Length: 155
Ligand SMILES: *[C@@H]1O[C@H](CO)[C@@H](O)[C@H](O)[C@H]1NC(C)=O
Ligand SMILES: *[C@@H]1O[C@H](CO)[C@@H](O)[C@H](O)[C@H]1NC(C)=O
Ligand SMILES: *[C@@H]1O[C@H](CO)[C@@H](O)[C@H](O)[C@H]1NC(C)=O
Ligand SMILES: *[C@@H]1O[C@H](CO)[C@@H](O)[C@H](O)[C@H]1NC(C)=O
Image (cartoon, rainbow, N blue to C red; front, side, top):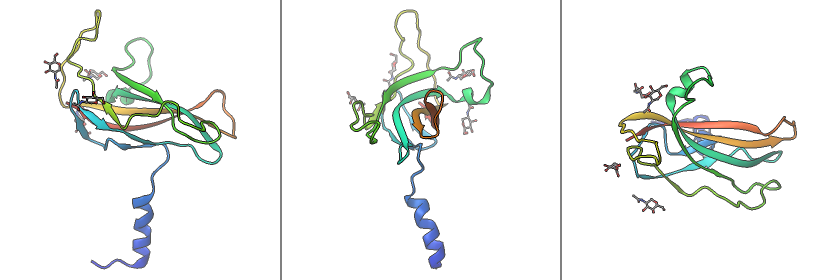
């Protein structure tokens, strides 16, 4: 198939452009087994005029996005992987706690310690969620909390 130059030029940015504030790995729908190490990549929002301070990585039950926020019961269930940063001058000249190249999926069947029991699950929808703390010259009451998420399937 022949593509016009205009069509080719239109395709190039789409292939190269990474959207700021997006998770590029894992990929949507990726299956991740308990105990499996999986590649994690986050492309942050920092830019000229935008400073990023930290971002935290969570695994949350995807149903949390279907319901209204309520503080009466369990908010959702999931896992906290960690809080990381990346170099972005001048706020963070050097990263002091970069994300590892791979995150390790816990085995949720295992007891959680103390009274906490585990639970076996397979082929369940979860969302790998990043909450990035950033700010810009526009000002904000506290940091701006920007989100990015990718649906994955646990086990
Ligand atoms: C996952 O990574 C951790 C830490 O790097 C390592 O200790 C572990 O052996 C790895 N597990 C697998 C299944 O590769
Ligand atoms: C996800 O949350 C829903 C309630 O919103 C719950 O019924 C379901 O069991 C949860 N899934 C897992 C795998 O924990
Ligand atoms: C997860 O933990 C359970 C309970 O300890 C164990 O039976 C199972 O083999 C573990 N799964 C993996 C993939 O390690
Ligand atoms: C998980 O997500 C897939 C794709 O969106 C959907 O087809 C499936 O019904 C979902 N499973 C559950 C248990 O909600």
